[in-house]
Image (cartoon, rainbow, N blue to C red; front, side):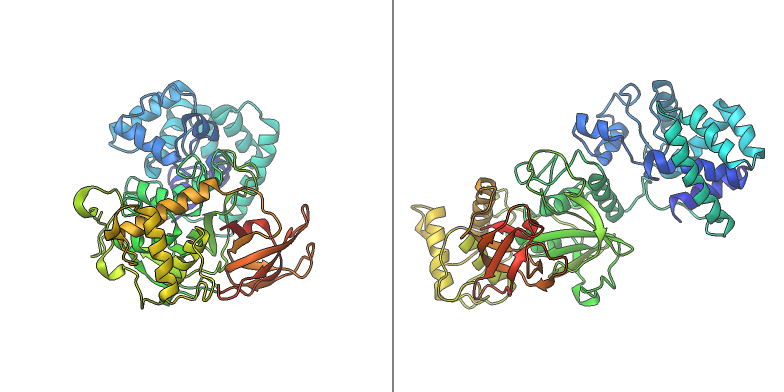
Length: 502
């Protein structure tokens, strides 16, 4: 049962009229979009924390200014200090988290009965939807700006009433989903990612990718780690090492049971991965949440509202779908580094890449080596670890471990992988921000177009390409041509957010 259905069910049980409960639903929709963890955006920016971090801080006592901070919180955005004190004491007396859905809803009924008698009496008898909406807005919520608020909330109330009258809202004994102290880890990280997407104080940025801004992989790693699953501790620092980290953290590869073209078979909380360039979270109902692009603006915050966003499902293309199951036999574990001296988790010996290795991981290694300037001129990124790749790995090892010949073995084990990741991170941070004609770029996959301003395009595969023409200001400003043996078939005009520096 969703939160609106739960509120409606409880309201009818309390003896409220159908119209009264629908007017209340309109208030909660406007105030929090039915998110019991909702903390007003101003607080997220000023405090530099997420909604979940705020709730955890209040619950465990590390954040002590809840009563007096003046920030709206919860389903009904309680703000004034006397009401926040009363709310906090009420929840603590019952041993509840301030983010507990059932607790918040029960407090709302208690407060209306105890402190807003005139509203409560009206909710028991009146069927005047407009009057009920206005009464709740002006007397209970009491925001600074009321007129436009009233128009919007009344429209919401009419929609809820229509659903109630058609039987879409029903009274039952079911519990609400989400927002409880018993919320599953999967629901915690999924909801936190959605909250971040809805909070424009967080944007897409490589320079502050571990907060307050994120890129695709750091967003996933952060929210999963915050939910108590040690994904980041197990080595997830970018898309290239996320697959192994997911498997070490209790996720299962369920790609074979999903339809990547349509999203069929996926469930809320599934992690979608393209090993070379992107990650997202499936949030259900054919939707995903992801950090997608800075849109040319690397400063903190989401200036367009689309840098981190929810959107309809599409096949990036994804190379893996991973699912976490509570209580799974493959429980989350943090692997200790070899020798106890490195912060990078050790990889199993079987995961080492060496001469004779083949497949997607080899191809990714080859692409990363080229990105770092090590040439693979004859075969490129063909997924086959031959002599050319071996020589490039040795050249990288000599640069990464000067004077330590024991590391110059041409095998990509834990130490070499860690050095590669660090080199890639530094390369990303120092990359130039504006592309130029002649640049080699990584095409991340997506549409390519015949003309720079054409509306309809066709799908192209990811891989390395060369910029041949630039038309700044066009819909699709970069004309790129594929580089042989890198997997892509792109040849045409593309959007800026589909390419990255290599």
